[in-house]
Image (cartoon, rainbow, N blue to C red; front, side, top):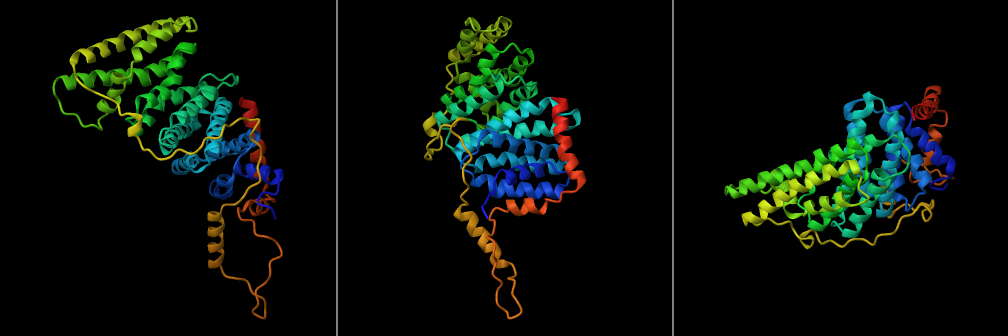
Length: 389
């Protein structure tokens, strides 16, 4: 028996994620998260979209708060346990799925999907930290946000996803600060460009109030307290956030974008106003003679960064799954602990069929006779999405 018998097993597995039976969903998730997905070397974009559709409705069905939180944490933390190219694709298709399904999410379910986006943004930064904030990796990661969220032409009514990312971005970046100037420039790039290129007034307001207004306020407070000779804990928000605007020349960037012919006319006033505010802060900082600096990139963790493999929808194809030695060893140890079946003479029974090491075929066969309620739920899920979107 193959680890994955074919498209039928994969499709059945995805359908089980949308089951109304919690035990069925939990068992399917364990197979996918702990065994199946981490052993994949690549997936087609189509299969990853199918997987995320199933995961989306799995979150949809999670009602109790502790169940929602545990599930969301498991899905987000998986980002750190996948091969780097697959992790990029997993995160990218997550963003696509959220934008596609956003219009169909009712008000009672919004909070858990807000949390899902927040947790993924945290793990997004954790992935960059795991790879020592490699500049090329940071650029590629930010490019995913630009192409899949901020400047996408997907035609979905999913701007709520963009708003949530802008709202939580700085808060989720907080545990990973301070960072080198080059890294800061890269990770803030999509928000700065959005302020110039997007005509969405709500998005403009979210970015301004949740990112640059906060940094400006903290920068002013840090400078004033340093002028007064106050001792401030290096882990204080005033220091962590306030150092960024004092060491990054945002004022010139805002002026350049506001003066660009590509800038939305309605956004120029906001950009020029921010240019003036940040310029005042920078001039005050220079005249004060106080020394405040960001860490150099070389001061970050210098672990070796793995070779990055380019990802494209044309290059990625469904690959045969090789179960890792680690997973195989664990499976063998587990088998040794179980009671061995014997016949009447005390001899071990020989098993004619191979063991399925990732449990997918067993899971699918055990649920072949899914009750009518579960079948209706799967059909209803598709109807909900099609009707709402």
